[in-house]
Amino acid sequence: MSAIEIRGLRKSFGGRVVLDGVDLDVQQGEVVVILGPSGSGKSTLLRCINHLERPDAGYVRVDGDVIGYRESGAVLRELPPAAVARQRARIGMVFQQFNLFPHLTVEENLLEGPLAAGAARTEVTARGRELLARVGLAGREDAYPSQLSGGQQQRVAIARTLVMKPAAVLLDEPTSALDPELVGEVLDVVRDLASGGQTLVVVTHEVGFARDVADTVVFMEDGRIVESGSPSAVFGDPREERTRAFLSAVR
Image (cartoon, rainbow, N blue to C red; front, side):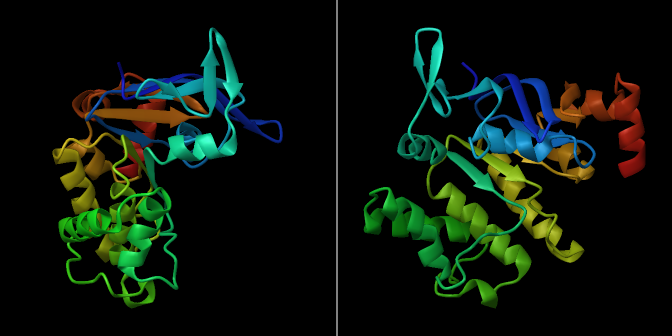
């Protein structure tokens, strides 16, 4: 069973088709990197995986459960918002913007979600501090977001996602809001997650990162998957002309 199974996913906004029948499987512990031009549907695909956007058609299954719906035979019935929120807690999401609460310390930002879900404070505090050390921010638990650089804030956002023990982590261009000199420190954290066996789906324009870390590279355009395969196949010998044109422009 795939960690993430996507079938026939479609989504439109105001008559504009953004996802046009996307099928994708992500295996447990696999790192899938999604490339493509702006407007190709990459971010919308991530938002449909954790049901921040409700698909118009198709479904997403994570660890065997259809996200946003209850299966009744062959029929899918919408879940109430509270049940969707419980499902979403199992799918970590790291956005382009850091989305930290500015009035809370780093540690308070990390504890907010798991404490609201009923976790024991002692346990989650220990886990939060372990994760801060893992992302290179040991000792910064009492700092406020305004006291951190953009790269540090994004690393806190990653730790905040991991403290929920997600089945998979979705990263939507996690370095796009950073100054160039800060990109490397965030990508190093993502590399560490990948080497540790965390299931990851990453939207990025960092081709070198994709080449180094991905198990599977997916190229999207116009809401469709144009090509997918190993980094050596997609970067070394792409089958599709559109993939070749895109890679020649971004390399």
